[in-house]
Image (cartoon, rainbow, N blue to C red; front, side):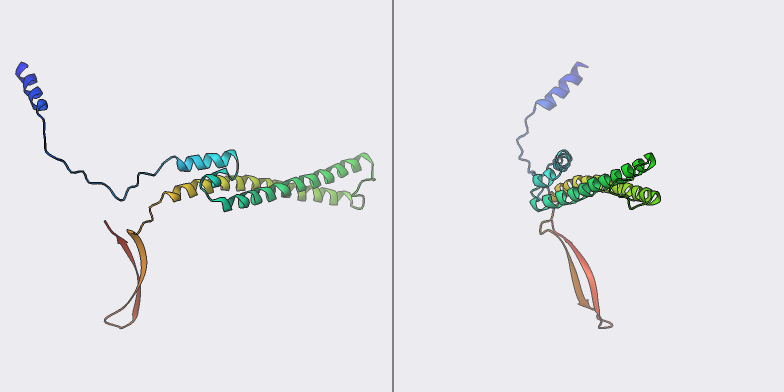
Length: 178
């Protein structure tokens, strides 16, 4: 066992002076941060539009607030009208007819309640959908900013004649240069 240990230590004790060439990968970029999409999504979840600002897509911020704000406006408007019809119907059941909707009968008040309740619920769904779309957009945009689109990758349409029939052929070439 002594000779076995001594034999291995002498192998590791030798110094190698040969030069080793290391090939550098030119396709990979060192500035890729895998957490960038998660950061952008988190920022958009905290404050809508903040992920778009993080991605430097400032023109999307008014679209985000326009979509969420419009949906929120319709939610609040339909909620107010729903409560107006509901309160008028409750007052009708109590025997009062001196409200703003006195020209409507009970069946029209119930139909109005259902209509505005449905529109209120749809508007709430749109608020949530646009909020989620804001987060998804920030995440995808941050991920695509790191996508490799240099000149070594290309897809170009090609038009060439067929030698037998003399008709024009259309094709697609994929070039990948190393």
